[in-house]
Length: 312
Image 1 (cartoon, one colour):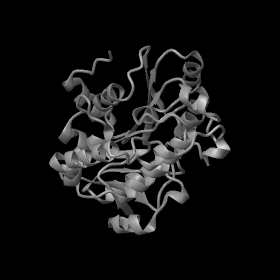
Image 2 (cartoon, rainbow, N blue to C red):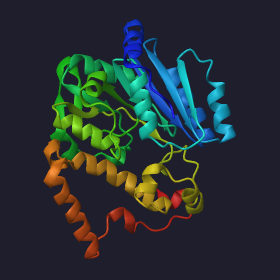
Image 3 (cartoon, helix red, strand yellow):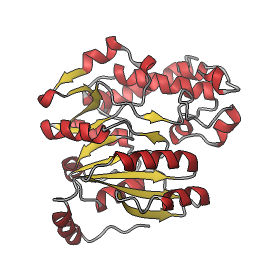
Image 4 (tube, rainbow, N blue to C red):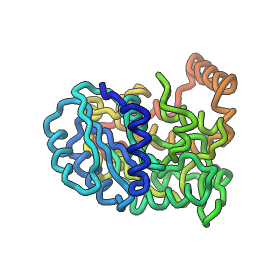
């Protein structure tokens, strides 16, 4: 297990380094060599002189490890942490937050391609609007945008920026200011990044997606031209973590779930109280009742897809 430095040591290092680096970015890699080759290159090339990339690798897949090694000479590649055990997301994220010094922090998934100037735009919005805590890019597709839902939540901000306000953002291609971590600390046991963002909103921070959306290409979305999963069998063998958590078993279900999640975010209340406490428990109870009476989530009803074309 990675051991964080002594707090005094970290403070001294941060005082020395924050004048040079303002943005630290984490990528967690696992066993997707082709995706990692594209995503890590795109991320490193998107960085300016204020940014540096930290990579935590889970597992022992030799091809993916070699891909990461090939990028270690890149001037924006800063630190590499290796874990033979798959630690998933929470432990690597906390390690990164505890050891990094940048006034802005991000995570980019190894199956995602960042958009042009993504971090510069997000950091500019954060600098111009001190009440913003976490803002992110958008992995939805054009057909996922529902104006009658999204436009109710779009806010005009200082500096000419606009944000579709939401209590949480996706866990990839976001920028969060360090002050949020200083206030809330690390991810708690069993706490997801979504829950962490909601906790930040409950503590007064405004979160959301930069608008017009900065697209993040999610290569594991069956609608992406980069998606490597062409059959249901390939999908079940390489399911993303979100698909595992939702017990998604076919490409058609996964494509429908991706769209449904994008729409649900646009429809979600921007009031954090609606996503915590008794209101959240009431919402969970309503979902369980729907399931008991045979009302399924629409994405679960998507037919089995034998190839990528039938999933679109």
